[in-house]
Length: 295
Image (tube, rainbow, N blue to C red):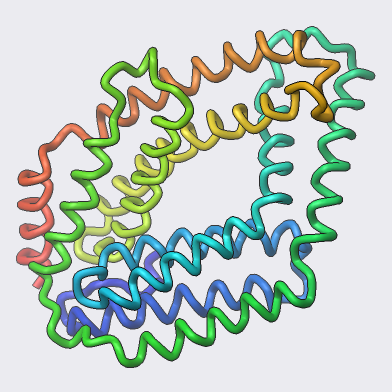
């Protein structure tokens, strides 16, 4: 994390953020050009870089309005186009997450369930990361790279960035469920999206106070992971619906899934209460202090 481009008091704010943008795009390009990566790894890693990219675009939106909207939509669409194989992998992760949950399945049945999901994943991989798709991804990255060089970031101050970071933090707070026990999948998914964006945006200020920054990102990542596991379980549930590959095992899978979902919600609630305890104004003041003391 310390080697990543980020804001530092000795660097111009705008140029530091331009370096962040270039680094994200370079990392995204490497995910699809590295010959040793499997298609599944390439899809997973590219989608992760698109989350970083979209988070940065949200941070910079008032200063690059047209490009921010355009490239954010492009990144979303590319990630969705690659989603089929990733969804199946998430279902496999959810099945592994159920280990120790007193599944009403024999080892043989569990192996069959796993095999059914693997078939879905392999079928998605063969139709997802094709040569045409790789070309589409590369062209999108080329266009974004060219745009970064002309962004008018030289006018940015740390106060501008801190305000945007505080707005992202406030958006995450507002996405908290009123009742965690009654929160549905859509509510928790929306919270997860806000946490993902906030987590990646906070990477830009880590060098200002490394211990605090790493702690904050670590807590945000743990919250993201809990919410992500909850989402994975929902994907597994979809595969048990009528006419879906796991429909024959629905009655035996659902009780364990519900128990595990509840455990993830309880853990996410504890993490969110710690991470998002401050009001946005207090969070903004903390950022200002980090900048002033680091100069």
